[in-house]
Image (cartoon, rainbow, N blue to C red):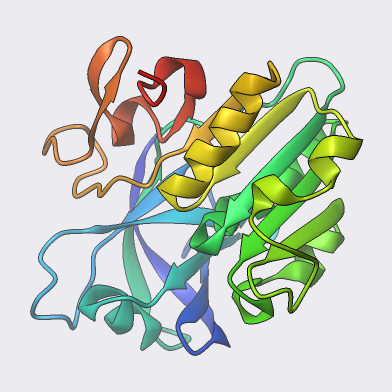
Length: 257
């Protein structure tokens, strides 16, 4: 069920100069349940150049705490306006949208691969997996140590492995270079982040016959499949990522054509 609500801003926390965590509460005290991998379409006020809603992955959702967290990368006028919100403000949100990450029916070991702001939905996903009796393992990548956010929260949920391109934290290189991939096996791999990273993870999984899902980050203006700006080519034809995704099994995509 979709909701259109003016959510209350309870906290705005800068994790880095260009990353902000916005915590929201439902005004009636009951945040609707959100599935891992779903997203929110936000109406941005205070930005004269931002006319359309902005899609933001759900970083954390807890119905008992009446809390919804959004991790936002400040890259333009719209996200900059969002970063200037204060506790007590309201944010008009259409949510939850899209499909969810796979939650296996039987106990499984799941590798969650994230890069950049693509690490955001992995926190909620790991929480849901652990609560369902699965073993979430995180593999997070960045250019340097400062690019790896919320590590302490990830460590509270499962084992965390890290790569950085400059070797300032974890192993040097890209996520697909990490020795974890040679040492352990997984029942499911899920990736979210820059497209080249996801394609590299998908290629690794295809080569090693591993089930792999990816969460695409196409621009989504409406979140309902009406504007057609988030279309992705699949083996079934063109589909709207906001409606059919954002999570896709790699075998449904045309990345290997």
